[in-house]
Amino acid sequence: MVLAVPLRDVEYCLLHCVFDATLQTPRLLRCTIQDNGVGIPPQQQQRLFELYYRGVHSRYMPGLGLGLYLCQQIIKAHQGKIGVISQPGCGATFRFTLPVAA
Image (cartoon, rainbow, N blue to C red; front, side, top):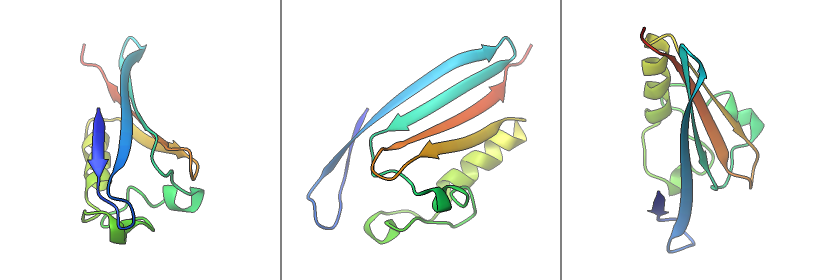
């Protein structure tokens, strides 16, 4: 999927996203979403899933800081886990796991 995201100094920034879902074990689904965006500094990664948290580029991007918080709440409600791996300038990889019903 390719998204066009308007930024302040650039007319459009193309963002390439890759989604993958595999069975990590017979009872655990592991999903990853990877992009080639601006990346996320380590100090921000700890706060990404907090209610109303928005990153340092938030003034250039729409949103209320609810999306990742809601994802975390839904995944936790289903006994899953969510996390992110990223470096500035290298995009981000979000991972989550969900148990598979018998």
